[in-house]
Amino acid sequence: MDPSAQRALDRLQHPDGAALRQLARLVVLETTNTPIKNVASARWIASQVTTALEAVSRGEHARKWVASRIEEARGQWKDETRPLRHWMPKEAEAPLRQVLSRPWSPDEKLVHRIIDQPAVRTLVAELLEDTLVRFQKRLKSMDATGLGSLGMRAARKGRGFLGGMVNNLGGVAENLGGVAENIVGAVAEELEHAVHGRIREFVASTSGEAIKGISRHLADPNYTSAFGDLRVAVLDVLLDTPVKELALEADKLRPEELVDVVIGAIRSTLAEPSFVDDMEARISKILDSAGDGTLGAWLTEVDLHEVWTATTTELVTRRLEAVVRTPDFETWWAGLFAE
Image 1 (cartoon, rainbow, N blue to C red):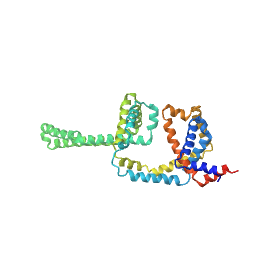
Image 2 (image 1 turned 180 degrees about the horizontal axis):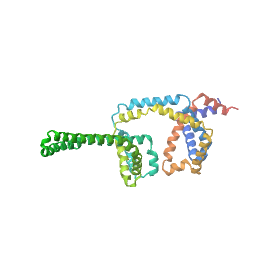
Image 3 (image 1 turned 90 degrees about the horizontal axis):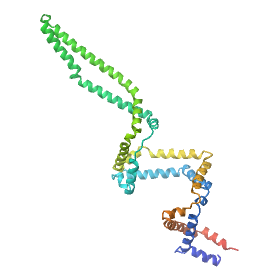
Image 4 (image 1 turned 120 degrees about the vertical axis):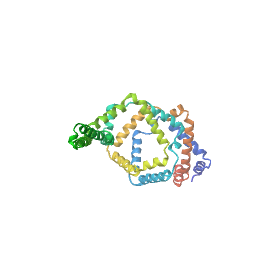
């Protein structure tokens, strides 16, 4: 190799990395001072996103990687008795509570369209029917002191009244009292049968109105504070639940199957002929909205420019150090100095 080329290469490969660090910093500064829209074209970004998604959705590598992470998480959390609150950053809890408790009234028609589904209708109908059946059973249990005792009282009065008035009739009074008891019992049984037959008919006709009532309640501005408290209460329940219980519930969703759904959706989306063009159009709008703004200017505004530059320079330097020690780089470098 040419002596000058060797001296330059030795400097690039020097253990202190000073030359490469200077080169890396120049690259970082040039990039941060370039308008974002000029760093990379929208078409290039769109093509890279497409390539990345294709790499995820094709073959078994990504699926196996996700499956191994899921299995690893199962082993990690299955015996974890500490609550989720243990991992909640203290700085994040207060803002999260504030967002969840914020008063919010959804549109009633929108709420009705969301909850007026077969599963919800079935739930409401079963609750109504169960309540009415319980009420019917309660009435039946009261029969001994209600309708049933009415028959017995009628029998006693019949025996006493008829016995006093027509002693010469013998057992007729007693028999008439028994008939009164049987009549009242038959009426009670018929009422019970009629009520039982009308419960489902009643539930079928009122479940729709019940759902409308639920929609009105959810959309009523008078209850916004109550539902805000409900959302915060749900958060507290989740935060105070042992992680192993949450992991068990999450596992019921069969996350491996969800991965297949996501990958299938990505494949279907990529199959659209206009995917790259549509992605380019969206990215172009984002870049155009940035105008001539640079990443460096934004970092300076939030007082992070020097920190970002230093850390990124260190990262680029480490990658360059690996590159300049490869035989391919040395061959390429020597070629630059060849006549």
